[in-house]
Length: 140
Image (tube, rainbow, N blue to C red; front, side, top):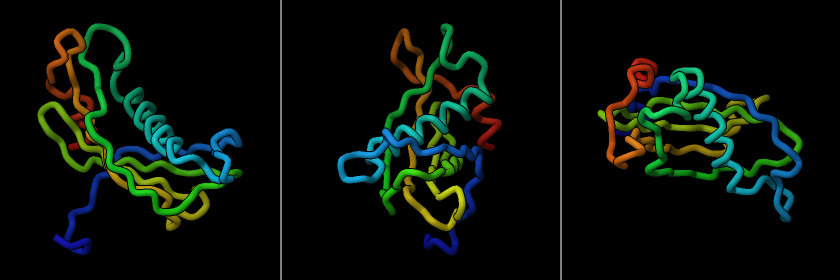
């Protein structure tokens, strides 16, 4: 399937993040590891809006099983970015979340894209569990 015939992905979140001076490395651009932090921040905000106590209690918890990241353009301070999250694939116990990091002033400027696979597990057993209904509903 080529890009023109791919179905549009459903946007599930959009989070604006201000770049911090301390995010830079010795080369004067935002360190590549920070991109993953920005993605994590956006996912955590999305989860917190959907599932009560997803990070506490005895229920199932999401873990990151895989990440794919394409670094397209360097980020430099000062600036703001928008992290866009899309539902790419919905499984029984996992969700694949596509992501894009774009410039807050011009969304056509792409800094990163790729996806993350999140799997819900029972922390006591380490085995996968069914996705929470709130996640399923948000991605359907």
